[in-house]
Figure 1 (tube, rainbow, N blue to C red):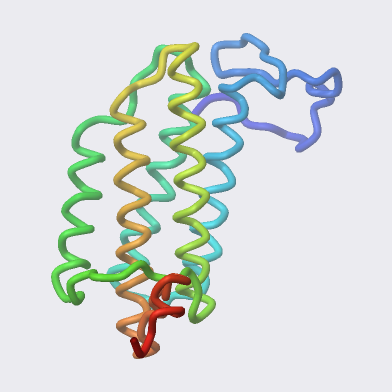
Figure 2: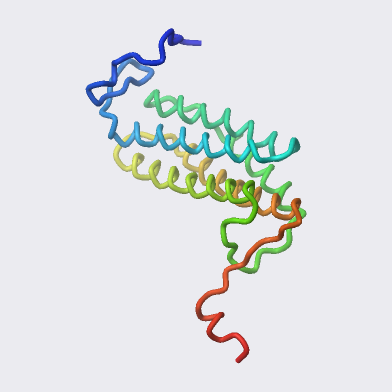
Length: 188
């Protein structure tokens, strides 16, 4: 492990810059720093969702994802370093397939919400989608591991599936979107 902080505050960012692992400094509004912050936010959202889940397979998967997201952050903090591999993506796909196997076929759009656990999983999914958009923007200007973007894309799919599985496990069911067109034409 690298340097350990003996104090939480270092004062090194007081001028609006932050340090990367290679010792370079970037403005705090740099797209790379922005992505690092969004990965941190996503990890916190997953931590909140985890706090609302019972011990079980979903919790185990999400705990592993939190570690993966630290790898994503480490990768972003070291420009040119590729830590996320195809195996990370394949792991998410395997988990998604396993959780999706017992769910009904999706025929309607689902409104985010329901229980606190489901709502927090859906919130994590939306934050994950934002991270993906930011990674794409970053990759247009700087080098980003393309596998990392695929990983984040699969993670948003997994979070959606886990929210559905949680609603199923709780017995609360899903709330389907009724478009204005459907609501206006009901009974015709």
